[in-house]
Length: 81
Image (cartoon, rainbow, N blue to C red):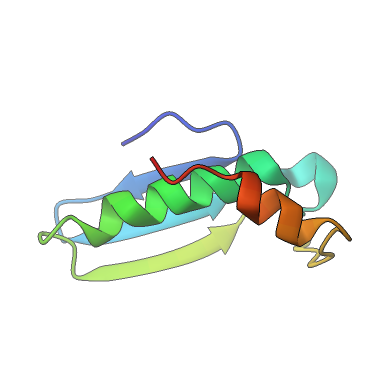
């Protein structure tokens, strides 16, 4: 559905959207690129009325939620458009 480096966004004809976090080598930890791509992907699926179910999953063995100390700076640096 889209070209992302840290995510994979898939849709199917039933109206399902699956957003895969795909930074297995970093335990799917967020970075500025992933946050920017998440915002873009979520904007894309929220604007698609044909989708009736949306969910997010992660690839790899683990999802590690470790926020960097500069998380606010990363968020502020992300451009929504």
